[in-house]
Image (cartoon, rainbow over all chains, first blue to last red; front, side):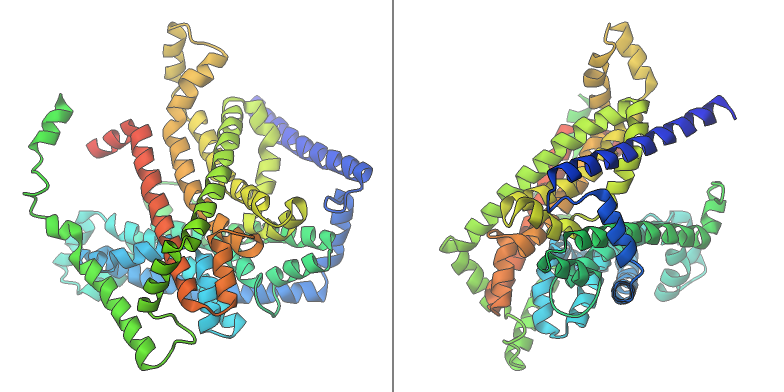
Length: 261
Length: 272
């Protein structure tokens, strides 16, 4: 093992040690203090191992993921289409600019009560809220990506007399894809947050509903277990997204000379 | 000198041919058309039960601001938001400088940071109620928690990316040891820190209003929850519009602040 690799392993080990020490400290303190709100780590762990595999919890996770998929797909698809139009035409960009800027500045939570009055169904409201939130990061990324398309590529497309639509879909979209993916990644973590927020209100099932319900049951352990699971879910989704991105953008990494990992 | 020449050679604003374009008539007309369309739809199809007409929203906005209700709520929101964000800046920059300048501290904290960072602040809302009770302390905590991560990460990156040569230059002037961090690392990392703060500023506002919505006893988020639940739609829409304006104001304020504080970055960018 080279000394450099050795140092790296040592560093990683130190990180794990500090983490373990923090947990141990919490455990010892919580046992002594006997606080209702800060249960010992071991009890949270036991609760998590009980709750996570249970049927109710898994079906709640499934319901949340289904909403995330629907809202994400609707929001991202709309954003890419609008973004292509806004990115390739200065007229469209100027016309839609102020309206989208204002909507983008709107904290998504403001959409929750508005959407729940319009769409009485809680599920439809949730999908709408997720789609709304996902829309803007993808839109901004798409516009940036299309605007950054090099002039040579634009001229080549013009030379081949490609029409507006063909140019957008066959030239600008692939060229902007790396940037769009960056927006899609931001949108994914945002989508997960919006699933939870939208599930804190209204009835039904889902991870947010689960966590919110535990609050009223004063089941602090259950809340910790649910929140930990959310963190884990975000981590896993992000990892899956990276794999998809590397797969979809393999040509791009090849073109810019970065090794395909 | 070069800067003055550049400024003087620019056409005056009044002579600029793009003045109309800069006012973006098309964009404002589109927004206006959208509002008129909404107004017409609400009136023609009698949708008052599900959507507030823009005219009613404007009425509610004027009324609630002039009697002080909405302006009081938004002031509360701004105060909580600024407090939480300031806390996040203090913690994020201090920790970030420490982690960025020491390999050992970086190694030691890495697992804890990577464990806590993916947990979304809003998911902590129900737990935070138990920790800090209903109301402002909980919201302050959630805002600070959400805002600290971008600032921390950008500070670490900025400090770590400082050009080694700057340290050598500082050493020749006798600046070594801890003074190096304050006089070299932090100024050099400032553009990166500013980016982190800009990202956090937007995020923190969203978290602030969201937290108010769920656990607030006051603030614009609580106002929306209250009026939404009571189906007072014009007031709800007025508050939402005001929140959007606040979001725009924060964006403009943070960007202009960034340009002033790390002005040299903008110059470099413009030159490229």
